[in-house]
Image (tube, rainbow, N blue to C red; front, side, top):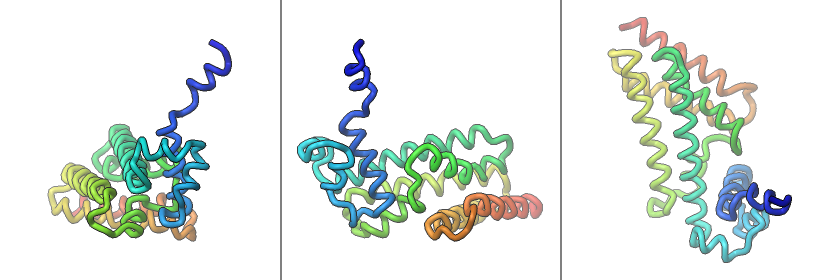
Length: 198
């Protein structure tokens, strides 16, 4: 195999380059401020390629967010599986965010909340992905909280989610040195309190 062939095989597909470009630019600059031309230039593809794969900007937004959800789901489950106790499994959401940010485009906070703010239309193709992410958060946190306490696990799950959302906002503000670490500490106290009041 010659070098040109090896480089061509190692290079991401045009579809993946478009998703990578969209993820980076939408996260960094916002959806409204990022034009299709900017995505095309960043991905080094022709307009016809984007329309062939995604039918336009809205389809690209939804596909990029769906890929982010798949990655997030996998990384969070890995963090849960690696945790040693029920309490640590519930706290794994904070570890998973850190891992995600080290592997992929970190963004300025929660991409799902940011997209929801930028695209509030309930009929937009991206709404299904946003709803799926919310369902994943609520369902999984509730399941994990049930292994920690029998004393209102739904309330504990809601509290951990609120702290998580606050930590994600802290990342966007950029004023707290370690919002994820601080959020993990706060959530740990809530979990410990729930255990002690059993």
